[in-house]
Image (cartoon, rainbow, N blue to C red):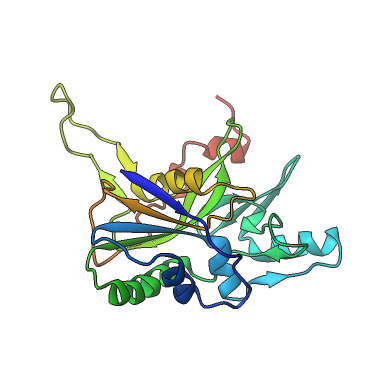
Length: 233
């Protein structure tokens, strides 16, 4: 698998996303995947606000959240079935504004895929809308797929034998978030100005249909559930 981050002009609020992509990526091979940072998706949708003060910033974060837990550094918030710092509300590289998450990253990924398939005249194309998130007890951020299209987001090993014939009961690979993490690593988090990345030869199963709920698990089945209930073993 190869990942090529694309250095671009500064994306402007309200700019056309598809036009921006084709301007900076002349060709795409059939069987490629394209990572697009959620920030430029949100900017294209006008998902930007300028808070008056810290209190208004907190109100915006709470409004964007389905569930909020204040922590030492950020608000840990539930958003679209994911736990994200500040519900994805971001003030980095935003020139004093707050950039919210896109309205519907799965819908955007699907629509963008169709436009780019037509433009590049290719059939197999994956799109992944990326953001960053923290992992428990690990420093730094990794990527997360807010939405994707054109490939299956999960590789399921359940019911299949391992090396020694033991039937696996739980193991699944999170393909979508793994692609997002690889792309985010290549694109960078600072002044790189690389909001796009072309991924080639990725070990994905291309698909015309995506189940947007395939990566979600019920809170009661989550291994971190005891931390939120206060239970201790």
